[in-house]
Image 1 (tube, one colour):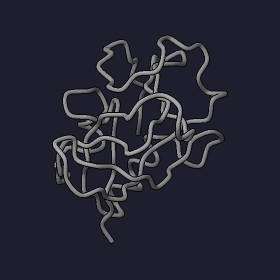
Image 2: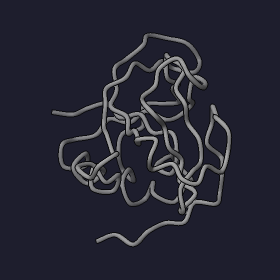
Image 3: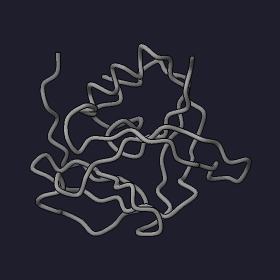
Length: 136
């Protein structure tokens, strides 16, 4: 069954992990989280990280995709799902230009992975310092 997936960082078009995970996926448009969520750049790889702490931070801007189970499994590996502190949760998102809200999956990190912190809370990830890792 296909799922909606909201991405806000290195999986967006034009960023380092897009080709590895979402190239060819159905792009549904520019979306934002309905709730304020904390998102910042952190860790030794300068990675964008969002925390599942509604009410803190900003409405985070990103992109919405429709993905199948095979692609989602690949993305889960890319996002280290199954390792401590790496989560995939369902959130509510809405089109930036206005429209009906939708439920979508999104990747979250635990706070303990965010060391060191390189920015304050952000609403839109545009940082270019991310250091990609080698994958299979």
